[in-house]
Length: 506
Image (cartoon, rainbow, N blue to C red; front, side, top):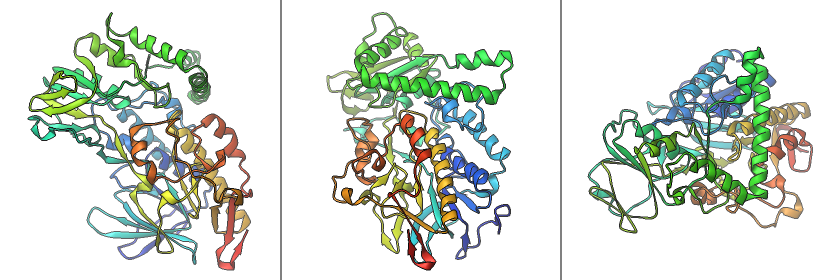
């Protein structure tokens, strides 16, 4: 079986052998597949995907108005130009991903409806064995020297449900955006949406078009950044005949530069940035609107800024189709929600946009030589490799920049690492802490003083730990990593290689 004639998985009980297994066919897994095919065409690889098709988030999310909260010039691939509006719908993103798969003949490498249950590393053979369950209950085994985890970081079909008093008393339906049924009819309904942030900013204007009225109840406000859903630079370049690949490259670089400036300003002058953001929102609200509903208590960028294309969230408020209530929920009532201050918010339907549950390494049962592995006991190297876990990378992207920027960066790094292993004649690589850090204090995956969304606060204990120094943490700093990671010395002290069959360690 060569790289161009991959056989379909063998029957239950048989083992399919490849060189690299990629877990997940969302945007990160597709980046991995493209880079493997382009950079290492001699490698046999498969992409195993739990869902029935590609796309990850953009396939599984069905809630009203689903769209990106990052611009597609940077959230899209660097190698495939984006030609639509910066903020795109899920359907537009799926179409873009589908084109990429077709243009590069990647579908032959993808196996859908494969839900990964276990992954065991065998030191004697330097191989991972992965068990995948199919919808009919059968199981298939896959074996590869290298495992590339690109399955995302949250449970796609299970939202986070706060336990509000009186939920059983409410007479209408209670729905969660993560578990949304696209057939749900909310026409003419009074809707209460609980939550804030990017999901709420998407759902509220979309539901306001059909609902009688929608009220967004939030415990605390989010920073919003309204703006036109077009890129002025791209629109200037297109009429003068600049080709789309060049436009994509220039606009992508300009956006990355501008984002860096914003992050720097947030750190250096958070009050000034907050004032500017609030002024942009206030300009789109009715005169005299109570700005406490849009004035967060935290510094900009401690949580993700939510972009509001064309200010559609605020248009619903101006039109009287939407409003905001800020405070603590006391309980659900048969007819709606009662706030702690006694305010009654009537509802025919309640929608929870309360976030999701962290999914650490795909909720897969990992083991090393048959011994269960707790990823929370490992220490990360740059947020992609882990002490005591050989021949594995995990794609965990950025919060302050587009996720795909890091997906593509990790793809380039991993292909370079695999090629380096071939050149050295080794079949095992793992990262090791230097002696000075072996007994050093362990930190959390993300410092809550730096970034503190609820899903991380609830799941930090499950994630790998950090050690002192930028090399032993996920810095969330694209503008630093874009220069550092391509220059990483693969023979540096962080890496330990071995030739398993000859028993040689380097």
